[in-house]
Image (cartoon, rainbow, N blue to C red; front, top):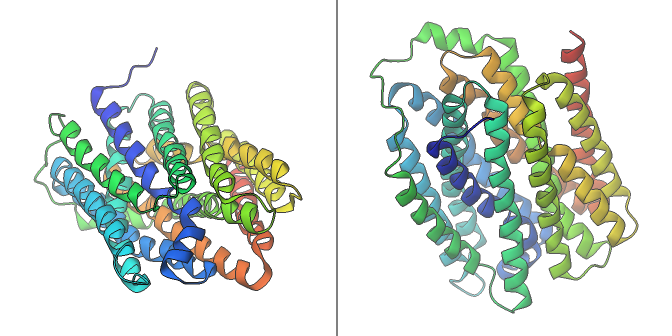
Length: 385
């Protein structure tokens, strides 16, 4: 039986806290639009500005993990994330109406913290579990999914109680403070003191596989972020579900993610990533298409569960595919590949916001369905080879 180290469990807790924050935004979108007095479609800029901070942070922290070690970097980005959450809550409650521009600026800071957490947790988990990276990554990312369930549930409870949504961001700031205390006694790899040679960096950047995996991760994360962000407004605005019920759709999505990630963990130790990725991506495309085509709220919720279950293992399997090919300078390779997270989150939710304004929320949901078709076709080609 595969056992995970205390460090891996602590990093799983970090992913839990991160999931709470990232997936609180979706069910808050309509309430945020009222708070800041802006159109719902403009809320897509929140995800765009978040990615503006996320993308360079992933690249920079992946590089720094090769030359500085990981302890100081990890603790710093966690503190940045916590401070950003507290500041976002503070800004949203100041002024009448609060400044949407200032809130967008704070989203860049949250993105910087999030990018560092994305890079460092995945690098450390893969490093700490080289015998079975897919198993460890899927179990750890199940905690991310648990956080993604807890966050929307918290939003639903706050809204049902007539309390302001920003209280959840103050709570998240407290979680990140506690996380620092949890990680302080953990042993993390020390700095090697050696520079990352330019020739090694160029060799990495010339690898076609690096860019293929970056694209796959970007398409998947864009589809995942876009789906989970806009399913709640679709249920509320198009299918007539109450706001509190619509917010629970995100919890359902991520609840099925938990089930799927725990189920695929033992399977991933026996099968290659490529066929698993093809099947998961194809089923994800069908699930999102079902969400877009739903005519009733119950049907939409059923397809939401199918989508979450189908998408569950993709992130960890793409990183496992990368870890099998880039055992040297894993931090730098992951830093480049995980930049796909920023690219996907930067573009897809915002594009879906524009499509929603132009053609409606139902049309916007066809965007992630198309992206997952591309991922499925790409991994069918890799599996065939």
